[in-house]
Length: 476
Image (cartoon, rainbow, N blue to C red; front, side):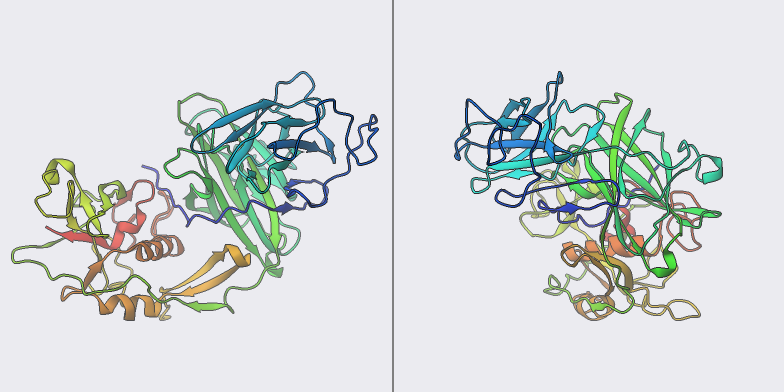
């Protein structure tokens, strides 16, 4: 089955500027800041607005949609503006002046459009209205086409889409198995994002990208990225967001990915819009090393009871499935969850919650033999590589990459709470580490050249969001 990586969810920026050379992706303007000048040839208002027989009061929640610096006239299209929160939904048609009025509302709302003509696009997940900022401006942009190709092959000379421009692209997917290949060749150094713009409130399409390593002439599969961008908790739609760090030596290099999507209702074709955006200067993460310390490693891990034995999380099936493990509200720890086996709460952890989930720290792992254990992962191979140093960790608030050094995190903090078997209870921060470890060291390649000693090479597979279980198990 397909394996999917999910990078830690990126904090989604509500106020952003996407500045492009030759193609504007659009800008979110807060109320009170400079907006585009408005001139549609019929402007009689010295303050920049049009004559309006029904002026909007300041207490109303309103939206103005712009395209090319002017209010967007939807023409014969019924474009609806939607204000939505957890308790209510309000809709209003966009008028010829690019405006919509929801009237007097109360609280915070996500704002998006329905019925927008296919020739336009925008980020539907980036706009919010609040009681303090009730007037929202949405900027539209157009789709740009790749330089060449039809997306049918991994290599440009055989059909891979090629692009050198930042901008917003669109691809149409005809089935859950179909993907289209893109090769992005940056012309300047910096940090770029490739991020999908699928509406999380409509929640009917889940986009993803497959990422490839290598050069324009030789490429190999790295991982599938299904997440990292805008998403709602428990929602079907999880936008992907991939960060690319390009130093001076990377200018002109090929960065290849493939775009696919799954329809919730199995209704195809579906479209996926995604933006390639330069977001900042590149600073080498090799020079920026940040030691990580544990915040949740508190209290010794219980010793096994007489007759108990440690079983790894695949339970002998060679399939890791994170849906089988949940955090108990009674203990605050992760447990094997099975209502059929533990529905009577016989272990005292809450109905359905079985043995506590553990992580092997000094204990040898069955699925991953490249390292003897996580504890000894600081010294791997003839070159004595420290696998506890994780490179290319993106820091959203700083807009840069850094190296996270988990050496003391594992060898001191979590080693300290291990029981005599060399295992410790699983925490949220430990799961974050295990996910990043699996990604950084390519434990899974989805069948494309699995590395010797990796779980994939040994026949292990994992469903979505479950690769971190390679080092985990419980006492049975």
